[in-house]
Image (cartoon, rainbow, N blue to C red):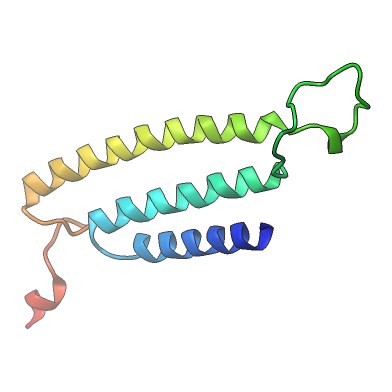
Length: 118
């Protein structure tokens, strides 16, 4: 199970970086979103996935880490999801304004450089 999640993190991060290196704004936005999902999944994995384990310490049980789920990674990921959504919305608005101004979705505002040199 951990191997599957690790492969998913690697695949999401690799696809996100690949898309971020492209010269189109939509690809950049999609790459940032994929990279954010990879980081969120990585943080949850670092918190040791535990099912049916309470996050609050019970006085009747021994206070060891094996008995409880760690709520901190879950809280961090929840916060990161909200911040990622706001960041994505802001980048989309900026990209739409840039597209309206330049009539291109190229990152530096220009058209395809291959067509200009030909």
